[in-house]
Amino acid sequence: MSGLDLGSQARGFAQVLQDVLNKTVCDNAQVNAIVNSRTGSAHIGTRLNKADLLSQKLAMRSLARTGIWLDVSSVWYRNDEGFLTARSSYYGVWLGEEGQHLLFHYDYEREKDLYTEAHLQVGGVHPQLETMLSEVGRDGDHFKDLHLPVGGRRLRPAVEDVLESLIAERLLDPKPGYKKVLDDARRDYRVKQISALVRSNQQTAADALRAAGWDVTKRDGDNRFPVLRGRGKGKNR
Image 1 (cartoon, rainbow, N blue to C red):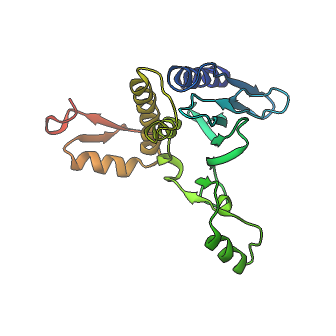
Image 2: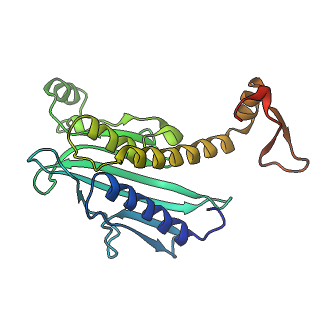
Image 3: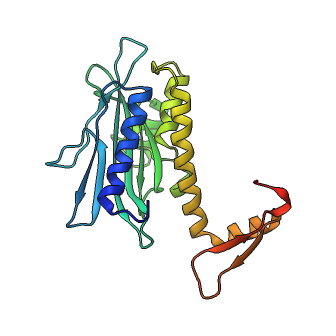
């Protein structure tokens, strides 16, 4: 997709996410993409509001009387190589008739200063923790105010991981065939993350491939990517 413009890439990503949701745990999910030409960024989100670029919650198929909701939003830009790159992302799960009670949410913010770039925040009550937070000068903070690390920039969970966990915990009523849809979408996400990880750690990747028996060389005058030559030791055929 690196040859496509930002708008085409963002709309394609939004369509994929919308299809995944409607084929697994939602009935009428709507995921929109809006490009901001002034900032050179694209906003993607569930029921995204064009006026304020804020996403809204989607009802998922609950196995209980209690409602369960999903809120997804992200901001993207094209990096120097033309790849769609996340500047920030958020996906939260909420409970209740209108989704007013937080269960948990994942956040990712590129180049974040204070907390780890990718983290999890969980709704809930923990009296001992709240006592400790007060003792260290954080009066009024709760369990949900803790930022728990989740895999960093490249190994953070995908939306598909969240949906799969909620299904496994018997909170969602998935549609037939949901597992293949989630597996296929997650595989594509993982491949993109691995590719980005390799591009930013080329020497480590080349060393690992050589150790596995691959012949890895670098093009003359090309400072970007190593080249694989042959199939090391009959692997990965």
